[in-house]
Amino acid sequence: MTKPKDGEPAFEPFADAAAVRIVGALAFENGPDTIALHGSLDITRDKVGLAQARALKATIDAVVAALEAADLPAEVAESTTAPTVVKNPFA
Image 1 (cartoon, helix red, strand yellow):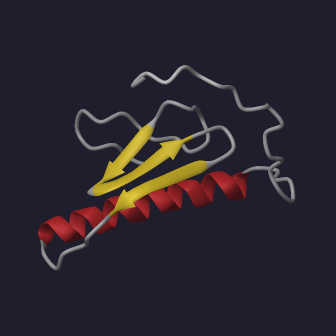
Image 2 (spheres, one colour):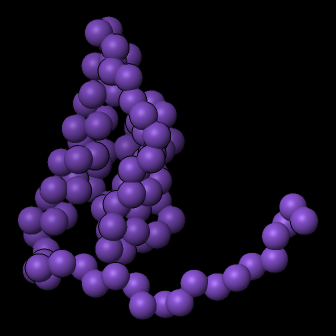
């Protein structure tokens, strides 16, 4: 679990499908079987960049620790749920 900043909820990898950790413009989306990363992150050579690099490292370290602590399968099985068709909200 990564240490949250003031007022930010803790990010416990693989614990739920609702938690998201944002570092710069990079989002870590939590899921029970995957952590999805979306966006980008520019680490600048200043105090802001240092804080972002530390937040990135803490989040990745938490993911690695969660994986190392688990009894892992060789590979996560892909979902067998058939896709569903939804009505186009823009039509």
